[in-house]
Length: 159
Image 1 (cartoon, rainbow, N blue to C red):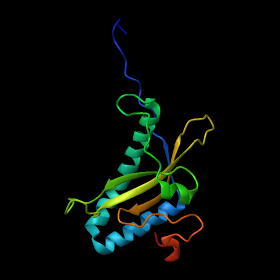
Image 2 (image 1 turned 90 degrees about the horizontal axis):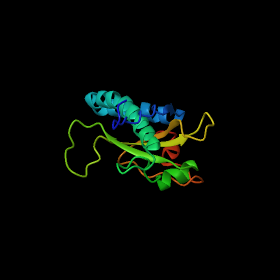
Image 3 (image 1 turned 120 degrees about the vertical axis):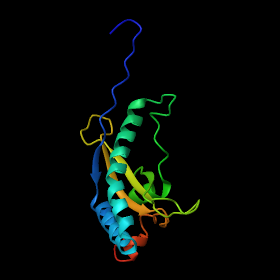
Image 4 (image 1 turned 135 degrees about the vertical axis):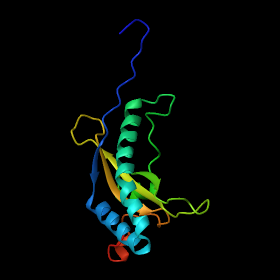
């Protein structure tokens, strides 16, 4: 390296993705519902979700590695209060859209929310795993308190 040259910090490897059984069931239910409504919507959802999760893992890893730089890296969003209370740990929310085109402003058509937590599975003191705890449509009701039945549980487990 010559004098005066700087090297950009290498991007942190993406976090390991862990999808809970509950979240897997919710993805399956979402696909089933979407397919009954519109096979094209179900196909878009199936195509978009894996890339959204991969991008989320990299984005969160980059934010964790950024250490609070001026670009906003190093800062995670504020945990979602209802989800954090429901799962009894800090839970973050990521919104994404699968609709080909939003019909109108403020519409929840094609808007989905991924609720995730961070974990240190290798014990080195740094988050290395992003655990998807739940996936909900943008119009879904908030999480119920931990001692109350969740709206999905009241309906026989359908997310």
